[in-house]
Length: 450
Image (cartoon, rainbow, N blue to C red; front, side, top):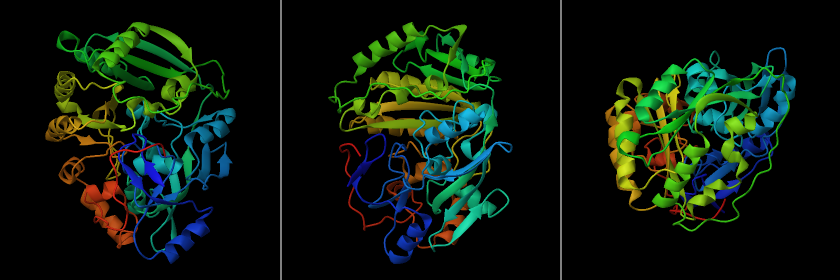
């Protein structure tokens, strides 16, 4: 079947296997001594990190194994989604410490990408709250991994993009909360400098994130809205299930252009004039605003889009204005642009977050985009920054190795547990983490839905 990531670029013809248990997975490893494969969870990584000619789905590893309310932990299969975790733990007064922008990410995918949220400056990334996980290795053995047990493998797997083995289940630490409502305040930023000042000013809040208008230039360069959130005190532990609209088909490629994006940005800025007033929002609205629009990725057309997320170190934050200025000058724009402030890095060699700022840009796929992204790469890598692998679809091997100086440390662990590179993806081959395979079908630039 034809598969792609959430960005619909690239696409690949793949054989998809969906074992019902760990025992079936072990059998597959034992009887497939040739080729390589990659595990795929919810399909919410944007590029080619979960693509290969042979893909193993974790969809049936979807069982809850244990919930300890006193210890505030949950153990579940790697195919369980964050949305399913929320359904189980919220009525018990528990809440995941780290949530990304969608609840449809699988637990296995959250670990493989070491995802982050709007609160990295407070809580770190997802794997900082991971007690342990079971990992199926290339030789068919299963190891329990934690920061104290098989620690090297634990840290390599956290953020390791599925290249060390298949995560079977995991035990997560949760936060005890009295409410899942969010007190949300918004502040208008007249330009990027003002936005950065607001992020610093509200750095003590639990959740902080900024939306940017990447089309404005001059004195308005980087204008935006900064959202600041904390858990409410209304004793609300009610689940929220929203029914929103769904995009039924891929829109024409010209639908998102400089004019339509500029109109949207002006309307959005007008609707969300931030004066610091507090509004009480349910957690779905605050954490997952785009989840209310089914198949929103189709808005970028059949050729798909690329999400470009990068880290700029704190001491090089002036690079942010150069990136945004170049994007504005290009006229290619970004329909969704997000800026967040990160706290310190953890000990996982391929984890993305580190002290600094992360900027996320979305671009409709077109040939002229790639030279622009090459220019942005030079700015990011030149200041000591790096790219988020869960969003990447085109970074070069040299760019990856420059941005992740601990890549050799990761490779030492992989060589020990997977010497024949049984676990590989299109991304790992492109980045030089695994040899290029000739056993899978060639990928295409774009394709229909998964």
